[in-house]
Every structure is written in C-alpha cells, then in structure tokens.
Image (cartoon, rainbow, N blue to C red):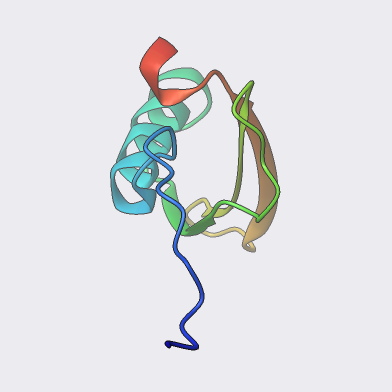
Length: 77
C-alpha cells in the first residue's frame, strides 16, 4: 500500500514558460515595448471553463506590477 497522493492530469493547463512568452509578445504589441514577464503561475482551483494566470510585468524604468488574466482553455486558444 502506498501513501503517495494521486496526481491528476491537467492537459488544459498552459505551460508557464510558453505563456510568459505569449504575454510578453501581446504586451509589446498592445501596450509598450521592452516589458519583462516573470512569475507566471496558475492558481489551484482554476476550472476547465477558463484558465487563470497570475504574472508580473516590469516595463523598462518602472516598478514590477502584478496582473491576473483569464483565458479560454488551452484547446480553444
């Protein structure tokens, strides 16, 4: 008998590294060039109907700011 917790596959979750690149590209196109995106995480409890991402953006010469984004599930993107 094992005491390991079962793991649940979450194929609809985005890869944080890939999402940091996508967020940075969007920010550069829509907001301002040169932003750095860090600390991309998905909080536990996000459902399958949308994905919540938390991340930090720092623009050149500015202070880091935390943001939250709700996205369509990976299969819909």
